[in-house]
Image (cartoon, rainbow, N blue to C red; front, side):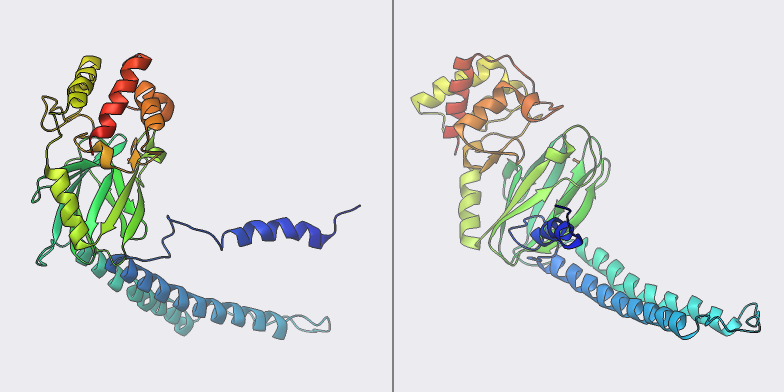
Length: 333
Ligand code: CUA
């Protein structure tokens, strides 16, 4: 049977309509902070003004084509004209106003969002772009973590963006716009979350092999839960338990201490993520694997398989070593 035009249209329609439903954690159209709400407001304004211009211009074009088309019985050629000062001035000056209408709110929001926070109770976070993960440090609270940034609901958060390697870009579509993390300078982004929950972040500047796998999460807690989280994260790792002693020995023996810190132990290197409370994170390997024993073991046994180009070394761990290190890391809540 020959396919009809309508039957060809069906699969296209299905693909297009599939974009309308479901859960889209990376959509920029859902705003859950003061900053993204203001961005969407500007975006909406630009959209409707340009829609109006589109209708006016296309309407004029269609009208002209229909009204003045050749009917086949013309006896003379149309009058030839050259230049029209009034029209040319109009279509030069009018777009200037349209562009100013877009530029002024856009640029002022950029400046506003990078000004230091002056609000009482605001939280400052130093975010460092690494290849390929994010380090988060809360200088006033004494917390160091990686790839999962907890923030309190309704409080201003000032994130200072830095890099000591290549350029990355900090992007949390529903909470914060994209802003670059540049070596040699500190960029800032300020926002206030308006919804509890977990939000997806992603590096948005091509930075090497595993750029696409450089992800993170922002977890918006109630102020009470946030305070609890800070208390738990500030504490050093429990080193007294017998399992902790044996686990740390395996960790040290395998050479993990050369790159990682576990506060409360002798491991204090700052090359890789701080692991003091890795057991409390929901994801590992910078937001690409759920934090469970199976994934953790797979990750430490073969990092480059999970994350191409990973700077985490393949230490040729035996199965036994990997099992005990995994068990130990999981206890670090
Ligand atoms: Cu970091 Cu892309």
